Length: 393
Image (cartoon, rainbow, N blue to C red; front, side, top):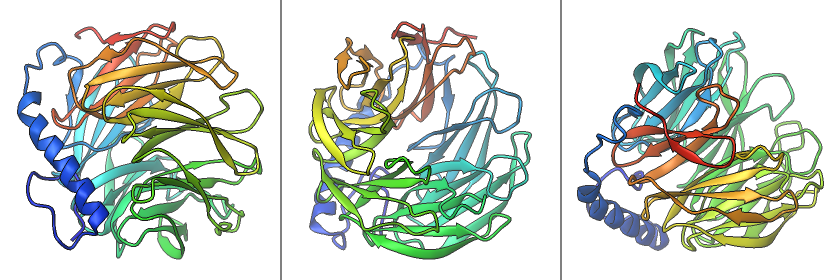
């Protein structure tokens, strides 16, 4: 059975492939060693932390209750639930609600799947071989749970309109089959499997972008077996061109997209967990990616997001490192290069992060997901590239 890497401390199933056994053993051993150390006092972050389920694994940011403030959804891989945190627009949380999903939820994505004008959510349930969809009521609540079965080791999911019919569809990384599955929206949020595409062994994090400037969403998935990114260029009818393989550093995790060098083409930044680095790949506007730089960050980096943190009009990067328990900020120069800032010590195992203006002061902030303290921690940006913990409220 396929299990999320961080669901438990225990033996690695012998049914897994050799590469997955090794990766799972390493990750689980690291987690089990860190857990006792991470049960430290949370008094310094208690006011700005918000409880999630056990072992939160990802984060999605959207406005679920139509109040103009950013909210968050976080799947808890060991509790079979997704937690929704409603923001107050001041850096605080108005409400915390949880919803049951399938076994081992590792990812969450948001979109209006049924066309009612309200944001819905979908989780990948890696242990349960399924997806769970909930439909939003526009007031911050979710109901009408639907399960999509027969998804083989779903690791992550993205929503986009792949066939240009005005409805968001789904693409799912199926780790157990080394495929990306495309599910087309038939209306009112009903999804139907259309086709699948072979990618590298152990596809992990799947993301969407427009890499060839045709306004049609493309897909990029990182594979942990061959340490590659696979680019699937969309054709606008729900199908994709033949995969383009790009070699990157060991264990590609989160990535971010943006025009790093100002040439009008989307570029990529990817965390290489096995290299303790972030790698920069420049796009040519035709779907090809060329690695141009690698920047050292903390130990065992995982989370990554982009935004203009210092207000100079250039995109910057924020990276969370799990073992060194810190955040690295790389400030972009607009010409494709980045300047490293001193690391920000967090004292938490931050597995994922998201960028947003959570207190609406026109400066970007950070939402940090701690995998072993089971909280979301908010850090306030000052608009100059600096971040500090939100003050208690």
